[in-house]
Length: 579
Image 1 (cartoon, rainbow, N blue to C red):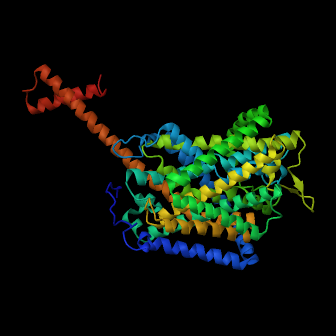
Image 2: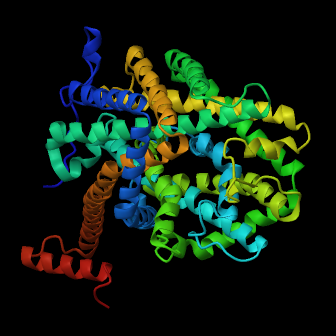
Image 3: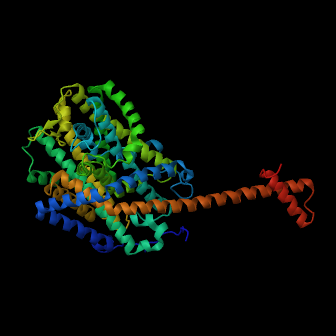
């Protein structure tokens, strides 16, 4: 059955209705999501070491059994995104009635650039290239050779995790949502992206399951970022001697305080608090990037940016399919995947509903080709610049300078302290102490904007697609994001954050694969309709042309069969079928 163009009605999923507070929620999605999240928080805080061990076991099992699967599907998303962008589907417009884009090209690209920023870039900007360079947790990545070559390979491997692959994940979800919302006029809900495959069944329990998976995945993905962010905030405060060694109580206080700021931002709304905070942290991030670029080894960084992009393009196919299968031992290969590639693919997939809704919201009126090129390449190029400047400065210091960013533990193994490597690097630059303080503020702002934006998206899904859900439920989801982040930090810190990100992405990855097939089905149908309309228009034009020719030749009054033959011969000649 072909997709239909019927308009949604207010009764499709009953998103909101006036009345009591509970009328604003969609119960089959809201309550299961709430119960799952609250249950996890309670178990994680009460269980302690048992939960830590359980998360580790689940992570190991998923990496061992599905690490190859994550590698294949994420690479497949890259191929899918490029294919629909450069192929004949690229002309399809994400709007009805030939609507103009809602935002100018410059504004739209700037907003995509903003979506590409986050706590992860600040946290890993220095730390990840150093980890690969130091061989943490092992050399299963295949990085060997001289220090200079290892440094180059470390940066390229970081590009893999922050380049085309994560943004292709966002393209898949964002494109499916944008088509459902802007063309089909459906509510903002993940379920409607699969309507081309399942029809009106998405209104029932199947759609509820899809939305619950999206909510839980988004909330845990955002909570992972918040946990990483609060770890870096605590590390920065310790580095500046403002606090002592961070404890669970310290983490709880920091998460509570910053979640409070996020709630204030949520209450003030998108056009006030969230808008201003987003603009401020964008400006601060760009300012930090420019500062490090021009106070560090500027010429080296500019050269390295060009060189690393070339190396990335040269190695992208090999890296895209790497599963560390030929590591020294199978255990080392799976350990490395769990630390890095599998963790990142899981993290990006869990973030996909959140980021997908955002980029879909701002892309009305764009063609599929514009959408893919903008979403896939603009943030990728900026991410490469970010890691080249921050990570490249750290690698330059290790290879050509005084080092000091990579330490050793009691067993003589290399260590990199993710939470404070950025501050160690910044301290050596002019005005380093002040810049370190500003960097902490930047992480706090990213924490707040991630929390309030994530809360809004989760709340829209839990309210049945209502674009303006009530304030009380936004506050609720903000509190739950902070609670999950705290539970993960208590349950094992970064190890727990990695494990949950890998695990929670598994069910939603299936939804994403279905999104690809749904998009293809819908795009093929629309393409056929476009071609049919073009043929009809062309035939009408040719018929009119033939009629004029017959009138000019005085053949209007001939027998019908002769007239049809004359028309046919003229039409064949016009279409180039005869000499």
